[in-house]
Image (spheres, rainbow over the protein chains, first blue to last red):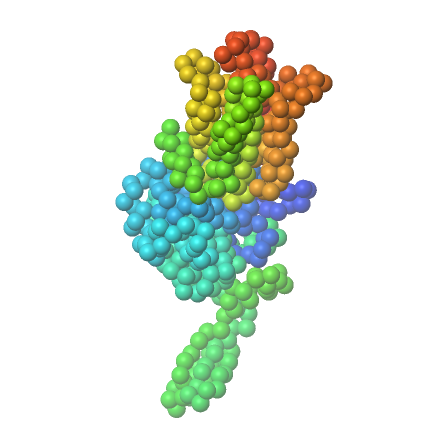
Length: 284
Length: 228
């Protein structure tokens, strides 16, 4: 059984007498991507700040690699790779020099820089100042910086926010690679497609509370109240039928007539589940 | 130690690219050179412009550059990223402070060359300049840490810099101001520089500079704790 790398137990946080996190609990194992899904202001960034010790929780506890973060030695930071809401790049320095500093801080071999730049598709821009990179390129550089020392824990705060689909896909591939090499990944996003595609488990966060948690497909199935099957027929017509034994005859008839192009279950997606639970849209 | 050196190396690479900061280090030595070469008058004491601009330099260059570098890195979230890379506040201050002190050392050597100081006089000149640099760097670092942005840090740094750098000059012409300025490090450094070659610096000068250094350190620690 894989070790729990991050564990939050009933974590709460209050800002100016307003609760921003209420009894948050979850854990992340090595080789797992855990998604925190919620709209802006739900408390996702605060969770990352508490895990990294940038903020203290007002209640509950946070363990990283089996140690309470408040009592952990500073060397625990060596295990983190982070993508925060602001890139934190040295704008006047080249991509290579930005990474060189962090390679030196982590005592990582310089040769890794070139291979990481190649992996994120920035090899040709290695001498370009960070200020002259597009938003997508900056985001890839930030991710490269987070991956440079092969950390055991990756904390990614909206890593694909406002990126074009092509760049987002490249970043998804990189994140999946990190999971495959055994890193524990915490991904915050308000993009339900991203969460469904990448995350083994997710927590839906609303106004500081976890309102649902589990595997994305399991959550969608749980809220599949209508329990319908969608048929697409060769004449372009779409039919929804209730997923009951009687449906078998309908499907059989269509199959017999060779009319069926596709059959899909029609459970809700994460966006719909979130709407049902909160009355709010994830993009709000 | 490798972290201090790594950040300092980064800072050296940025030197020529960050013109706003770089100009602070070269402006006063260049002005002193121009004035010394162009204004020749028997009424003006020897090295008048060197000591005048050197005292201004100490009140300005380290203070504004420390405030600018730290506030920029704070505003751009670089300080958080460094913290999450296990860089402590002390390591960061040593690397940025070390860079500023070395830049000011180069500026001070420039003043020494312009003034034609040699032997013990040049060592005393540089020693006094380095003491002032440390005090100003601590004040600038405190301002950089407290500023929410580069703009707000500059809004605080500029008037503070004006007070420390112009006080020795104003004190030359205004007796009441001189009485107050006597308790300020930049005035005492100006006194030491002006008297090089004539009289030895007094213990009072070093005590006042020491007290200023202590106060600057206390202000820095308070600023650091409040903006941790």
